[in-house]
Length: 173
Image (tube, helix red, strand yellow):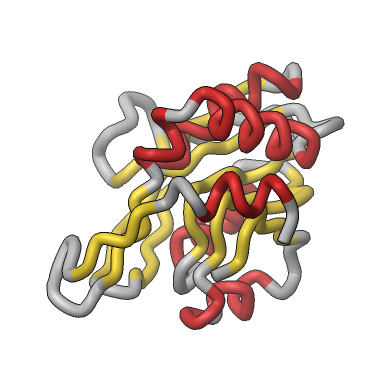
């Protein structure tokens, strides 16, 4: 186990039955509160985001990681938000979660043609949110160079929905 892996895993708390019975929620707030751990995570994600034009963050916890990654990488930040939260014209995509369904949107003008984009999120679970975001970025005219996540929940097989994308996970549980 690497030092970064230990740093991350030691600062993620399991919360059973949240947001509903049967779901084991991975709480990253202890990691976010630790400046050494947060810095290490942002630095590693920014390394993965080298040579991109935009970093996409997925609402809501993905914003927390993607914005500083964009800053460190010298790239722009683009939010992908839940339906109805963006003020201008959007593209929308619906998907299934491990405990329901949702729709995400991105502004139609968020990317210049051919922008190189990395998508950053906290957790890859079933892959639905990431897959929908990949499709949104492509529909908006940009190139997805990869998806980078803090943690991948391997037992939910989200990686299977992203076989055509370069997926990087800082830890896999």
